[in-house]
Amino acid sequence: MERLEFLPFVEKQDRFAAGVFRQFLIQEEGDMVLIVTPTEEYKEWVYAYIKTRLKDYPKKVVVKSAQQDQVKDNINPRYTFENFVVGPSNQLAYKVCLEVAENPGRSFSPLFLYGSVGLGKTHLLHAIGNRAKTKGYRAMYSSINDFSEEMVKALKEGKIEKFREKYINVDILLLDDVQFLAGKERTQMELFRVFEKLQTFEKQIVLVSDRHPKDLKDVPDRLVSRFESGLLLEIGLDDETRISVIKKKLMEYGFSPEDSVVSYVAENTGYNVREIEGFIRTMKILGEVPKPVRRDQRSIETVVRYVAKNFKVDPELLRTDSKDRKVVSARQIAMYLCKTLLGSSYTEISRYFGKKDHTSALYAIKKVEEKRRTDRKFHHMLKFLEDGLRKHLS
Image 1 (cartoon, one colour):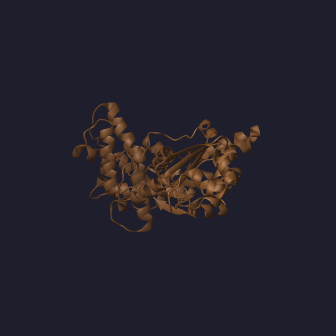
Image 2: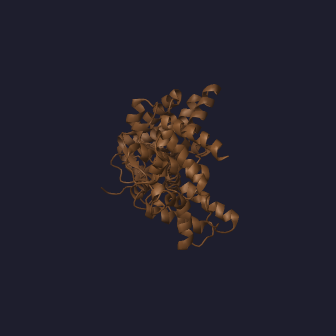
Image 3: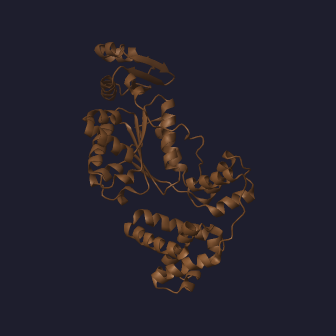
């Protein structure tokens, strides 16, 4: 097809519509046309017209309203694709998010990202928003808690329609911490309404959670099915990417990424980018790389014996390679409590339990953290052990 200019192309099909379009600001650059309308109502009309009448137009058409600039998008300019550390465990998520930012609503809507805390999911949300904005798209970020609080306020003030318009009149909606939808019936209802409207106009929705949609508690099936209707991607942090993150964060805080410093950080942090950054930030405040602190072995023994007693197993079994389920569970919990209550390093913990390197403790503690987030009974059991141990250790 011949690449015609926008207005002549429209007029060829519909002179009335061409006359309406002339009232808008239209900018053409390369293979993109930006249309700025005076109101949100006109913007929705343009979207509907494009969807039904301009399917064959060869250029990408982006529509904004002048009213949009009055709404805060909550996108943090600090998080971009350029400063996101890419590795084997998150490469696919990175590529998909980049595609979504470049061509929202085309292939992956909704996009649902899930995984443990501190792995860069929120970073990718903001990166999508920042890149999309440079392309002329309207993006908005919100956590579910903020969405819910804003909705409650709108209801009290009789402004619920204005609230809905805010979230519907975007090209890309970025929603964080979806797991906090649990039990919030009115929030779920409003989100479903927004979700359906955005899908009708083929807008882009990106959702982030610490768990798979099927594992969301107290969320209705109709919402879960919507979350699963697009692309689901799990984000992890493999050893290679973790080391790359440590090196990048060290340089950001003015440290030289020497092997000894990288190893020190790796031995004292887990598979959580926030934990890694927090540890390096502490190093920066202290002004030097702290020397490893040897934890009193009696304190670790206190934790092990207390956990073993509650599980009714011999504490010495926790230092063996026993595969008995009760022993394995007690061993992992003991490692977790040594880390969280004593501040023991992964190397110290692994050494005490007779393991070859710090990765054994890393794996065990990660398993406990994941189960604690998804299993309420397990969380309460850990809380009981923590409270009891604090009294023994004080």
